[in-house]
Length: 235
Figure 1 (cartoon, rainbow, N blue to C red):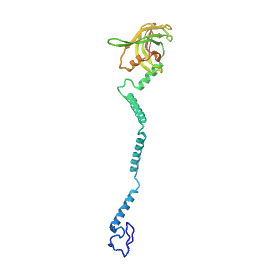
Figure 2: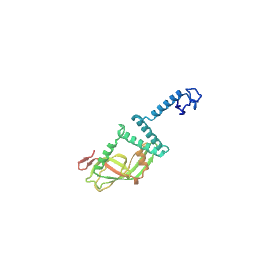
Figure 3: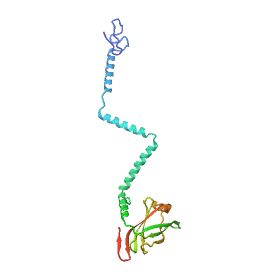
């Protein structure tokens, strides 16, 4: 007896349908056999194991989806990540750019050299003011030189006057030559010292807006000539 591959009906001798047709579901036995064979192959193919390249692709896609899902709707996290990356690239660019006025390493070396220089005279700044004129603007201040660390009377002193914040970070500096004689333990006051103000320079804007109580001062001596004919150089 013939059994239908589709519905498993067992054909009887009394069935009146054509010999090639299932009396129960009406499908041709040949067609039912082909359909069953195709379905079996599809099932086998769908259960084949993934190769290593396919697994790798699925892992990558899954990781990307997790990252996107994590940051989706978290604007503050995205801003922090973006800001950190931009800050890192900016630092790298400043460090390695040939157009940078002074590299990070050069600045640190300069700070170390400045810290190692002996102190001869100490500036005390007072009466800082901003004056606007018709054609230019100026920032003026007075300096009283503390000479308690000076060992001998000077004929002239050349150096750099440094203005820093309360943490000691240099914000502005200007070259200065003291042509007046300085004697140990005798202060000297100079009035009307200053420079032309440039509104586009951050250091100038800091000098104008920052109060003296929020500044610290230092004078780095480059050359010093004494009245006895001797001299010292710290370049």
